[in-house]
Image (cartoon, rainbow, N blue to C red; front, side, top):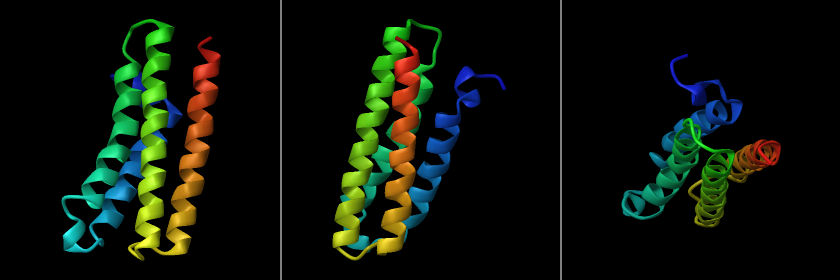
Length: 117
């Protein structure tokens, strides 16, 4: 692997979740194309991108800051999932799946942040 972030389990999981979010937003109504669909996709991508960007050869404090950004974006994804569920764009089962996956990812991000202290 050429880049350090590729070895991180949290990056691998966030990449997979980002791909899965991309697949479900394609099923949203066209009226959501430039609102909820775009917002949730950008937030899911932001989790992954912040992990990768923070993993550059820099200080632990800087990496921790980017992990905080990733965790915040994860909360944005979950909030968008609530909106999608409430609008019946996703099933309760899909919502639960993503909610649980992002909850676990957040725990992993927090554990990595704590290990940097």
